[in-house]
Amino acid sequence: MDAADTENTTENAADGTGEPDDSWGEVAPDAARRLLLAAVEAFAERGFHATTTRDIASRAGMSPAALYIHYRTKEELLYQISRVGHERSVRILTEAGNSAVTPADRLAAAVRAFVRWHAERHTTARVVQYELNALAEEHYAEIVALRRRSEEILRGILQDGVAAGDFTVPDVRGTALAVLSLCIDVARWFRSGGTRTPEEIGELYAGLVLRMVGAPAFPAGETAGGEGRGA
Image 1: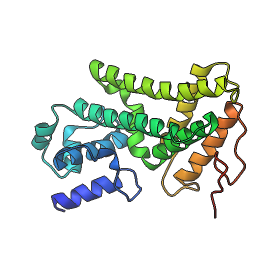
Image 2 (image 1 turned 30 degrees about the vertical axis):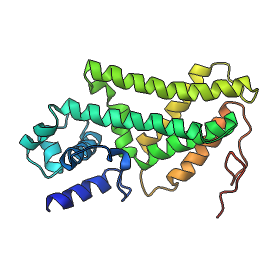
Image 3 (image 1 turned 180 degrees about the horizontal axis):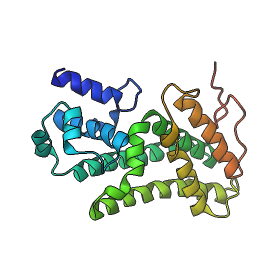
Image 4 (image 1 turned 90 degrees about the horizontal axis):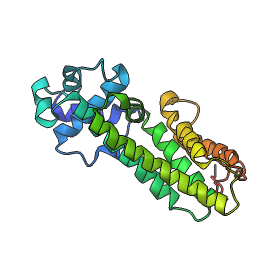
């Protein structure tokens, strides 16, 4: 298998979707991106501490020495994976939250998109969300700040819903954390080829969260905006 074949196989197989993960499009050069994708697979399969740099380089079709041209340490690889993943989370929540008008529609859109990403990219998401404790102190602080930004976005939607009289949420911060945890946990159990698609799980969770905050859940077969999903 040559380098190009290794790159395509690693990129497409990382989450079992058969489709490239565009989360890593910004990473350059190609060798650095291949190493990140290989690290995602290795960390998800073996855990950060049990993975060696040789494991990662081998999966990327490279020598161990080549890894250090792009990343000084194994921890730096984890940091880059965490940074890209959490920046993606902030972007997903921001765009979804701005895609509708009413608080209920904004909340449903945010949950739907966040859940879908954690299902579609479950391998990546497991590393992004569950290997934080292996980060160096300064990197951990940076990632925690991004996680707080995600919480702030969701909390803002909940506060708007409470102010409008649409939501009944006595504890906005606690509810925001509960909703985020619910969405993130999808990455832990989701497997490709299961009985539900990422889209279906997103719709299910959007309805559950609307009920959680006391908003009327959209009828079966409809989105929060009232549009039918079709056959």
